Image 1: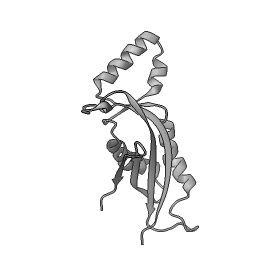
Image 2 (image 1 turned 45 degrees about the horizontal axis):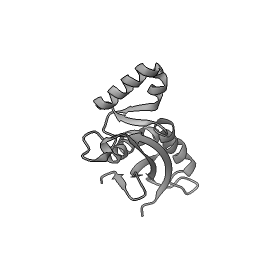
Image 3 (image 1 turned 90 degrees about the vertical axis):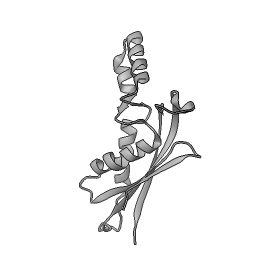
Image 4 (image 1 turned 180 degrees about the vertical axis):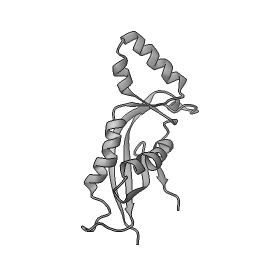
Length: 152
């Protein structure tokens, strides 16, 4: 038998998809719903995979603090670099702009965001808990979602 614990968290953030053929190449945003699925080799002494509050603390609050109400930009996006440089020169408030843009090592598609959460953030955040993140589902809209799971 396999038992997983699941918690979701909602965030709002902007992005643009570099190389996209359609309107997603423009600056825009989403109200994302991110689902985290956790698994453990055995249940704890209380009978849980992990307390839901720990999922909130370790995973939900990570995306809340790092990505919510930010603009997610690929560090190789020359358009975003130009925009940030232009606005910081006009307004002279580089700190506000720096705190608004999160530079990512990947193009901010839902697929890449899910893979990053699953393979990079999950293991770091859950280290020492005896629990592993096995699936991340990112709903970009109510109609569109991506699932990233650990391969067996």
